[in-house]
Image (cartoon, rainbow, N blue to C red; front, side):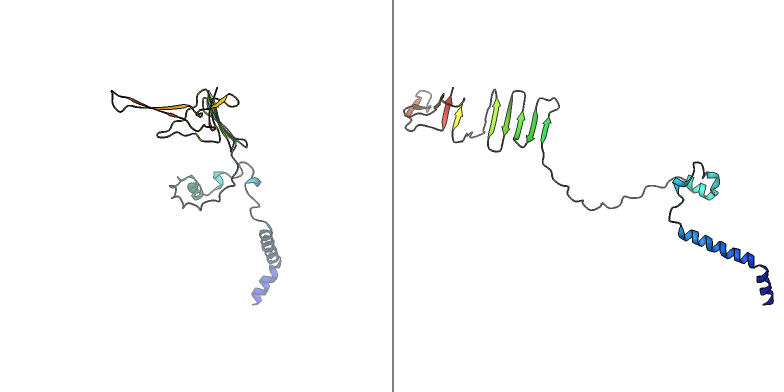
Length: 191
């Protein structure tokens, strides 16, 4: 025990320096935040391959392994907010366009257009046709053919003749003629 006490007395300064060094290192380690020394703090060319161990250099220079399998698909995301659609869409040649805005929908072509405003459908063209495989019908409060206004006359007036031609045999065609007894105020021919 005397030898230990003598050794301790002879080396008090060394042991005190060791304790202070360990305490200072511990304090510095505990007081520094994470990632204090990182890429932004390093000068260019400060860390070179010569400063790495041969094993570390071998690890850095070895070929990459194969890409692992893809993980499972994630859950479906939430639907985004809906928004109104408006604008004009043109064909590549510019000959046709579709416009959608708060006034309605308009289709335009080289010689005509079709516009729907929510209550009325208006077709404007040099020629408009409506074809039906079995029946084509036009319905409305007034169906006007060729215009509107005072030049319009009912297509079927009281007293007009209506005829049907029937060909029961090649030698004796029959023509049935009738008389309109009720006039039409809904179907008008205008010109």
